[in-house]
Length: 344
Length: 273
Image 1 (cartoon, one colour):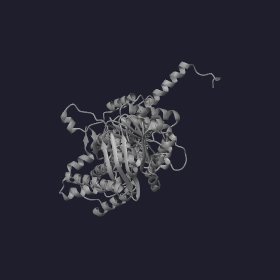
Image 2 (cartoon, rainbow over the protein chains, first blue to last red):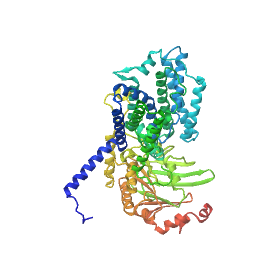
Image 3 (tube, rainbow over the protein chains, first blue to last red):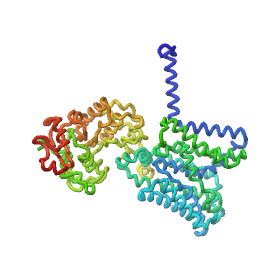
Image 4 (tube, chains in turn blue, red):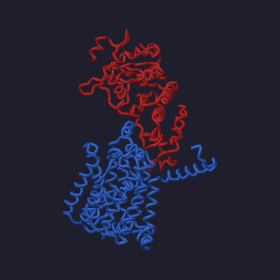
C-alpha cells in the first residue's frame, strides 16, 4: 500500500471532505428518497419526451387526482407500518364508507354532512374493530386485516346489494370535493396535502409520533418506558379507518355514487406498495411521509405515462410489481443483510 | 444486622411472589441506602429479576411492603416507579434501535415546547422540544463524565454494547432518579467496556443515588459494591457488607444458601430445594 504512489495529502483530504459533504446532503434527504426522486425525474423525462402533453398542467392534475385516493391510504398505511403492523383492509374500508356515505346522504334527504359524518364514523368503527381484534384477540395484523378485508367488503356488498348506491352529484358539497378547485388546484390535492402535513407533524414533531416509532423499533422498550401500546395500536387503526373513510367519500364524490367494490378494490395493495417503495420497513420503526408521497407520485406518474402512451393497462401492474421488488432489493442491499434464510 | 445509619431509600419487607404453583420469592427483605451500591446476587432462578420487577411495577408482589424514603408506597406500573424516582436499566437494555441517543433517553417522557400565549397553549397540540432534549441529554452524559458517546444524535443501532449500556444508564439518571437498578449491566461487555461501566456505576453512587447492581460476576460485585444481598431459591441467604465477606463465601451463599455461620439455617436451605 505504501509502495504505490498515494495522492498528495491535501488532495486526499479534500476528497474526503467532499465525500462527507455529499454524504451529509444524502443524509438529510435520505438515500431512499433520493433514489425515488431520481426515478421520478427519469419517468417524467421519459414520458415527457415521448408525449408533449404528458407534463402539461391538465395532465398533471389528472395524475394527482387519480393518485389522491391511493395517496391517502398510503399515508395512513405508513403510520400503521411504522408501528410494526399492517392494515390490508383499507381498500375494503374505503369501499364500505363510500357506500355508507352515499346511502346516508340519500336517506337523510340529500344532506351531504350526514353522508360524510356517517362515513367517517363507520371508518373509525372499522379501524377500532381491527385494533381490538389484533390487540385483544391476539391475531397477527396481517391475518386480522386479511379477514376484515373480506368481511368489510362483504358488508359493503350486503348493504348495497352489490350495486352502486345513491347519486350525490346533485349536491354542491360532493361536487366541490370531487371537481372543485381552490386557487386553481383541485380540492382533492388540497385534501391529500392537508392529510400529508397532518401525518408528517404527527410523526415527526409530537410525542405521539415519537412513541409510534419507538413501538415499531422495540415494543418491549416502549412498554418499559410506560407507553400504553394497546391504546396506540387501536388508535392507529382507528386513524387508518378515518382516513380510509375520507378516501371513500372522495370515491363517492368522484364517481357520483357509493361504490361497494369498483374503484376501491386493490387499493390496499397499491397503498402498501407505495409505503414500502417509500422506504417503510415492514418490520416497523422506519419510514415517513416524504418517502411515501414520492412513491405515490412515482407510481402515479408511471401509471399515467403508460396510459398516455396507450400501453396495455395490464402492463401497469407488471411495472408496479417490478418497481416494488427492485426498490426493496436495493433497500436490503444497502442495509448489508446477509443472504441467509428468511429476510428480516 | 445493618450497620447503616439514617433512613434507607428503599426498603422491601417480606415480599412474596408466586407464578402459579411456583413460589418464586419467600419473605424477601431488601434494603437500598443512598450513596451506596448494593449488589443483588444469586444463581439463575434465585428470584433476582422477579424481585426487581416487583419494585419496577412490571408485576405486583403478592404480599409484602415497599417502603420508599420512610413511607409505604404502592407500585403498580412502570410509571408509578418512575414517579417515585426508581429507574431500572434492563438487561436487554430496552433501547429502540431506530431512534437516536437523545430520543431514547426521553422515550415516553418527551419534553414539549411551550407557547408564549396561554390561548395557543390550549388550542394547539404541543410539539417536541428537540433542542431542549438534546441539551439535557448532552448535559447528563457530561455529568456522568461519559466520553464514549460522541453525539446524542447518533442512532442507537450504530453503538457498541458498552455505549448502549452507558446510554441506558444515562437515561435512568436523566430523571433525577433516586434509586437506579442495573440488571446485569456488564453481562455482554468486553474488558475495557466493563471497566467503563463499573466506573460509571461507582460515580452514580458517589452522586448520591442508591444503586442496585444485579450481577453474576464476583469481580464486578467486589469492585463496586458496598453491600451484598444474596438470594438463594427465592430467600435472602445473607445481607452483608462487601468488606466483611470473601468471594468464596459469596459464591457459597449463592450456590448453597449458606457459608459457615452466614446464610440460611441448614433445614431451610435443604427444604427450599
